[in-house]
Image (cartoon, rainbow, N blue to C red; front, side):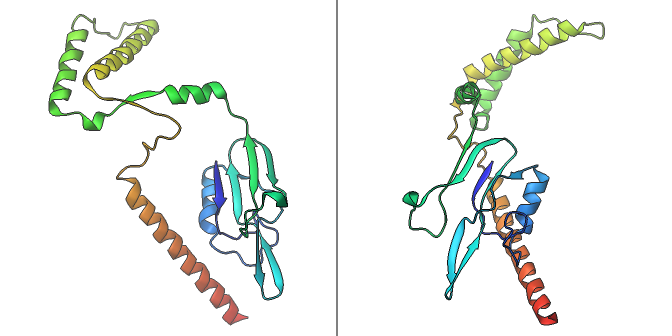
Length: 207
């Protein structure tokens, strides 16, 4: 799910839109990820242009799962912003959510050469009595071997690596690879913005 002030204008989510702007990037995101626009046609943003009040839809809720409720809250929820307050609800599998909070991993990047050597030595010690599978093995034997490998590897890492707990607020996805990609995203959005502005100026000149 993606939700927020996208500051982009397109007829795909705003029937009032007469001049698409900064929309191509988000339209591509929607198409490439199978997202659906869960807004209705009501405006989410208001501002003044002279004496004229202008309405638009730039606060979007995008999802590839069912949203049980989507609504704009009444005026008694107003914040003083020129954006509406939007409320939406989704069905959450509480058991699935609880399982996510109990997931345990290991900080492999922090392992030293000594840790890696200790893990290798322990693995070999545990596996030395283990029979090797051959081409004549059965499907059940392969399944049993896979289960043993998974359980034994977990045991080895529990002993030799630092354990970490992953919860809903963890940000393990944020790493050194993300920073240059975020920078590239900003540059691409600026480039597309300049291209859209240039096309709009050219269209005006032709008119």
